[in-house]
Length: 552
Image 1: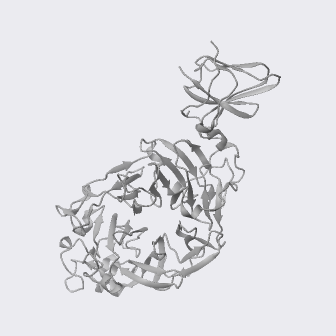
Image 2: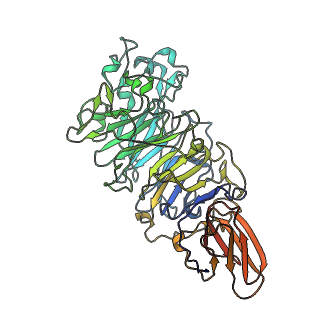
């Protein structure tokens, strides 16, 4: 019996991608499962910040000066202002230099007007890696500060662990962007301990003081860039700051409620311990607790509290998210853990000598684990719809994944050393470094009244119709064409409109053309017996007509 087929179906994807065409930019999309937002990208080796939609189209761009590069992050404020970090492309004159080096913080309007600039890159101090825009508009920034060989030894550093004859410990500064005034500071150098030389400062029992930083703990062969803080975050309710310290394989939390003077001591602030570490987690061997089997973090990036855009009713609200770069020999993981701050006691718990928890609440890997491997960079974000957005930094690969481990969006930064490449070209590791991505909800304040129409692509020679094949199935209406049997398993017949010279095409849900028949009239008969089970897009005379199920 012949039936009119109503096209309103759920999607099943085939393995065949448009691999020969879409090698960069948008790779795949299941729009009915993907979060409806806009993704902010600030790729390395160039100066522009891009806002893209789920089709990989640029909806807005902030153009940077040609002679600068990221340093390394950018954030979009609810008022539409963009806050970027950058550095000069030329590094020959820098007194302090290591990966992640920065120099400038700029606040730009939506229309790319520079509203304020702050610079720190001199003989003794330099911005690097990350910033955090606070709710009051002030900006927290990470900076290196120079310590001479003599100062380091006086503080208790083993002289044999100073091959560069200097150290660059990290500090945090809070900047009022309009005036450029530094209104608060915290220095790791004020919170040291050592058990190497009792004649020097900071001598004590390291294991008795997890709130202090062992000046002789070192995983980087004495490199001056001792801590390499690569992320900073702020919790407005607790008035606390989080730092990611990859060379210690730890996340630290400090009190921001102190004055600058109190932050240099072990007392003061609403929690009473001044600028000492309130919490540290990921590698308890740093404070002589446990052993290597207790280590959970491995050169992590993008440590932050899960509070942005997320409802307090979410089970993971307020927990800590990290991209765990070197969790495996050939794969990374994305992790969530709960530091379990005891608000009424104003502290974080220690059990059996270690800060809790004992393990992660969540560990995510890619369905193909090696696709998610990056020894550095990278980011991890939970989205409003419960999915996760992950950027694999060394490959410029960003994807959205459901809690059930289903990939629903993939995008590859289409730049080689900062220069746009053509669709169809291929990229190798480190070609398109992307430090981090962040997806902002459709209703984010910055977007109110803004033009977010598609304005082209980053890549050259884009396949402009690729996203059409991945249109949300809920937008597919009924078709007046007869397709039978439904579902099909051997032969599919399609009755065609009156006239001749019709063209019928079937595509996989990812856009691969499976079959094409031309010069048809009245009907098309298609042998689907060898097709994989799934759903196929039907196009008649170049127009997407509907979808059909093939079963076995």
